[in-house]
Amino acid sequence: MSRTANLAIEIRIDCVGWSAVQGIDALVAGSLQAAIEESGDAFAQGAEVSLLFCDDAAIRELNRRFRGQDKPTNVLSFPGPDPIETATFLGDIAIARETVAREALEQGRSLEQHCRHMIVHGFLHLLGYDHEAEEEAEAMEAMEIRILRKLGVDDPYREDRRKETIDHERA
Image (tube, rainbow, N blue to C red; front, side, top):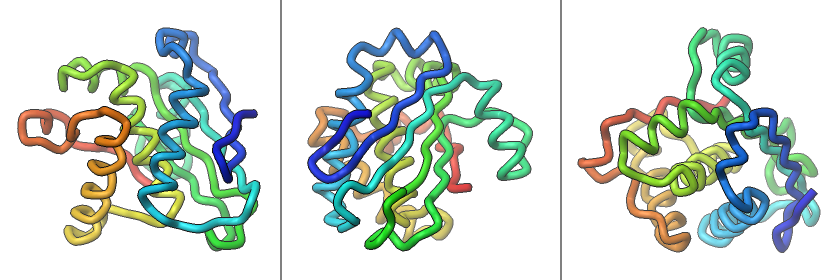
């Protein structure tokens, strides 16, 4: 288990393809720390988040079981049951290797850059951010852009990068 200043991070890698991402623990911790700092959201000291780095088959099953969509997706977020301010468990994030790698290639980004985006996006869902309504989507995208900029990642929502529609949801 790794940590950020105020968050315990459980990482499980269930797909050998994720070995292509060097220093995944540090990548996750840095991405989450930047999201925490930018969002300003407060949560219980020692709260925990869990990340699963899986393949398309595993995320497809999660997507089918929890969202009724029998297809792989890039990231799924499963918020914990308690309000963020008092939660000891913020929730789970699952990220699919093949989909994220394909999208990174289509967007001309590195796997690490797109992985950071999926980590940040999934974590913001755990904090209660969403993109169902246009106004919510704009606010969430703006937050993601600011966080990713701090991490040295270009704006994923630039028009020339919109080949892929972000196809992930909170479960």
